[in-house]
Image (cartoon, rainbow, N blue to C red; front, side, top):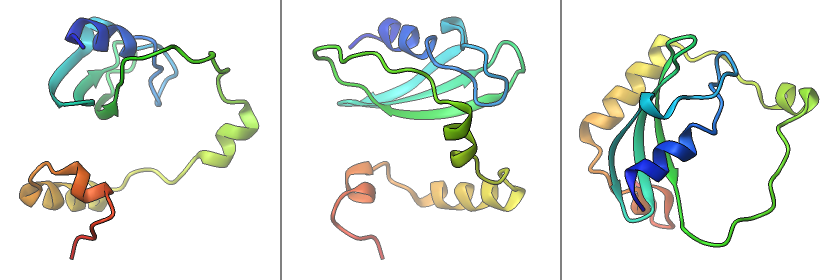
Length: 110
């Protein structure tokens, strides 16, 4: 799958912070391994920057779904990300070797 298509797909997604759609020009593909794509996305409206890891597979398109309702959104809102959360992720990533299959697979990390 080409980067252009990945950027177009990301342009259909909305920013978590302000709700505006991303622009394909503000999507940087960092890399990919098979179906797993890694992107850096900047919102042109609120200037929020995100790192995205997404599994994207080619295949038959599924039926389009509606956006979440207000009740569904309220049920999924969590706490704000704290500085300690960012530092914990940084410390994790220092030694992370990129093996997502092992991380999310059946083999347990110790």
